[in-house]
Image (cartoon, rainbow over the protein chains, first blue to last red):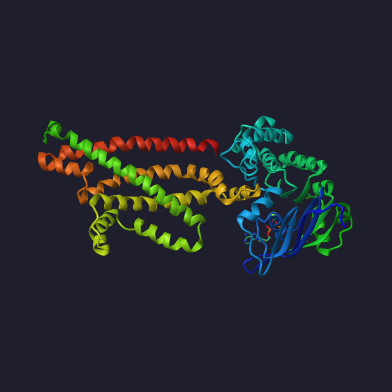
Length: 257
Length: 220
Ligand SMILES: Nc1ncnc2c1ncn2[C@@H]1O[C@H](COP(=O)(O)OP(=O)(O)OP(=O)(O)O)[C@@H](O)[C@H]1O
Ligand SMILES: [Mg+2]
C-alpha cells in the first residue's frame, strides 16, 4: 500500500467543553516530512485540534495514530491514563504561544530536562545535546541565562530547542510568534523555516499568511469545528473553494489602512 | 517611681532557659509535623480525587476558624471524655499545635501550587514527563519560591502560639514566667524579660524573611 506511512493521523475528532462543541469531526493526516499549516478564524478550533494531536486535550470521539502510538476515543473506550500518554508526547513535540519555559532553570537546563528526566540520558550527553541545539537556534552564548533574562524571540527559540531535544517525529506549533514584538518574529520564523528545510514533520497554527504560503507544503482551513478545506499552499491561497475561506483570505489581502 | 530590680531574677535564669528550650522544642516539632500535615493536605487538595477536597477543606476551616486556645483546651479536657482515653498535656499540645499549623501550611502549599502557571504543567507534559515528575521537578520548586515568605511568617506565628500551652501547665517560656513571678513577686521584671527573649529569637527570623523575599525577585 502506501510506501510512506503516515506520521500522524487524527480522524473524526470531536471535542466539547460542557455543551459547547468546538471540534465536530476534524480530520488530518500528515506524512513524514510534511509541513502543514492550519489557518482559520479565531475560535474556529485550531488550537484545540492541535492540542488533540498530542492529547493535551482528550477528545470525546475520534482516533489518533502517531507512529507506533494509537488511541481511540468514544463510547465504551477507556480514557488513556498518564502512563499511556507520556510516550506519545515524547514523539510528538509541541511549542506554545507563551513559550512556557521553566523559569527556575537556565536555557541549557530547560533543554536538558526532557532528555535527562524522560529519555534517561546521562548529564554529559544531555548537556552536549543541549549545547548543539542552542547553537542550532542561534543561542550558543545563552546557555547559562535564565528565561527572565531572555527576549521573547530568544525564549521561543529555547522552547523550540527544548522540544527538539526529545527528537520528536512530529512538531506542533501553536501561534509561536503571536506573543512576540514584530521585530522578533523573523528570528523565530527563520528557525522554523530551517526545520522545514531539514525535513522535520510539522503542523503549525499561524496567522502569518506570508509565512504559511512560503514554508508549508499544504494549508488547511479550519471552520466550524472541522478541517473544511486542505490542499497545496498555492491552491488554497490562489484558488480557495470554500466560501468562508474566500472571505477569510480577503480580509488578509485587503491593503492596510 | 517603680524601681526596677532585675537582680531578683538571678536564681531563675535556669528556669527561663528551660522554658525557652521547651518553647523551641514545641515550635520545631510542631512545625515539622505541621509541614507534613500541610504538604499532604495541600497535595491531596490540588492533585487528589475531587471528593477528597470538601472534607479536607472542612478540617482546615475548623482549625483556622476557632481560637487555638479553645482547640487546646478542647483537646486536653474534652476529647478524653469523648474517646475515653486520657491524654497527657504535652501530647494534647503537640497534636493541637501540629494540626493547627498543618491547616495553615496546607493553604500556603495549595496557594503556592496553584500560583504556578498551568502552562508549566503543559510544557512538562509536552516533553513526555509524567504528572508526579512534573510536580516534583517543575511545579514544586516554583511553588516553594512563592511560599517561603508566608511560610516564615506562619512559623513565627507558630512560635508565638506555643505560649498558649502554658494554660495546660506545659513548662514553656511563658509558663516559667508565671512560676517565677509567683516565687519572686516581680511580675514587671519577669514578663519584660520573657517578652525580650521572644523578641530576640523572633526578630532575626523576620529579617531572614525579608531577605528571602528580596532575593526571590532575582530569577523572575
Ligand atoms: N478549556 C476550554 N474550556 C472552554 N472553552 C474552551 C476551552 N478551550 C477552548 N475553548 C473554546 O473553544 C473554541 C475554540 O478555541 P480554540 O482555542 O481552539 O480556537 P482557535 O482557532 O485556536 O482560536 P485563536 O485563533 O483565537 O487562537 C473557542 O470558542 C474557545 O473559547
Ligand atoms: Mg489558538
